[in-house]
Length: 377
Image (tube, rainbow, N blue to C red; front, side, top):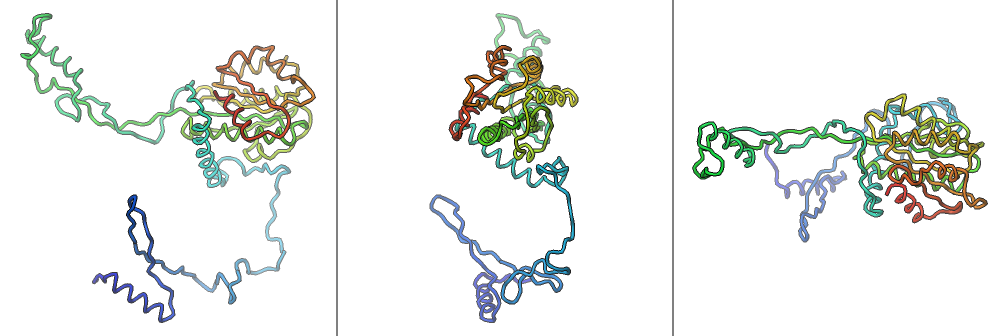
């Protein structure tokens, strides 16, 4: 087929407009340099509609959904749970697109936080796992030919060859007269290497007892979102979040349930620790994962430390870091949680355990950032 020039196509497009048809050829400006802009033509095709369906009526109003049935007629019913934590919240239940969007936004936030708060790169505690990513590097060695001469390895081969020929003796050998054979030269060769990365499981533990309503809950979930975002950057998105809530009993919930569950009854903090330990041990997570635990509470507890201290000790045996935010009630100088944590000597073990205390009031963004910095530094 003959190729028409752009001028001829533009003339045909102008004739289309005169005949009452929409224009097809459009132009887009693209910046290709600091001061250089080029104009690129492109064709805009009409959308094809099959059958008798029309997306709009005579006056442009939408006719979508105007099928059989009367207005208000129920065509399907589906039960939902009281707190919105339905059965379809699990992995592989159709939420992939939404979860990927949330993860992308969190990853972006994590990069900003790492730069803004100057957060550290924590040391890996567990082994790395292979990924589907590959790099190409001069890692393999080859004798005789290759991309880059390995001078140290080559010199060793030359010395060995000349020693075998009786041409090398310590202290009296003229290095310029050594014989260098073709196979004495050792080269570095470009090879395909699989990328190995560390992976992490992070447990977010939230007290949702009756006293944790309003600002305390808001501060805790804000900080936990910031921490999760940072860990996504730290472990290059190989992070599995697990969400635990507790009053006098603990349960694992979805992300949506974690951020939306309302305050309830009393408080027994060790129930949350027991649930985390149960998950770690039943799924053998400590073998392949770096483990983090971040907790939010107001510090009120039915326990006096007798149950909690041994459970915290057990958690620290698995974890890279345990960080606790305490939103202290203004009526107390020190919460029960703070007292028994100090009795257990955990605040002195700063490489594993961190605690940050905030007063119960409206907490600013700067205070949340300072709390995150303290828990991770």
